[in-house]
Structure formats: C-alpha cells, structure tokens
Figure 1 (spheres, rainbow, N blue to C red):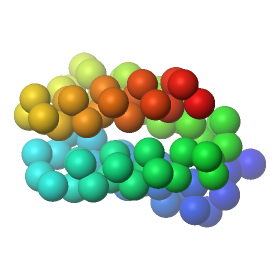
Figure 2: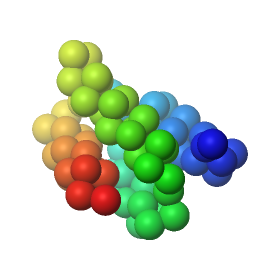
Figure 3: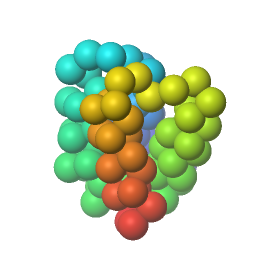
Length: 77
C-alpha cells in the first residue's frame, strides 16, 4: 500500500512533468533524496509516469536531463 507521503510525492512529480520552471529541478532533487524511503510500488509508478510523459515532452533540455537522471536513479533502486 502506498503511504500518504508517497502519494504526495507522486502528485508533485506529476505536477512538475512538462513544466519549464525551477520546480522540475527542485522536485527531482527532493525525490532523489527520498528514494531509500520509498516503496517499490511508488517507484514503479514514478518510472511509468516519467516514461509515459515522453509522448508529451519533458520541457526544456535542462528539464529533460533532470527527468532522465531521476529515471535512472529510480531504476537503480
């Protein structure tokens, strides 16, 4: 079962996907720092959300780099 905290992180990730502001870097960094605390189910949802969003774009190149780094770290866990 996903905790309320994990639901909030998933919501933050979904909000930030495709944005072109400071929120992308802030969200990605925060989630990366929290990875050890997250369940496998939460990580799987995040991976799916990021991968699915490629159809819509990740924002600017710097944003795409942040998302790809987070995706890589999620898959390593």
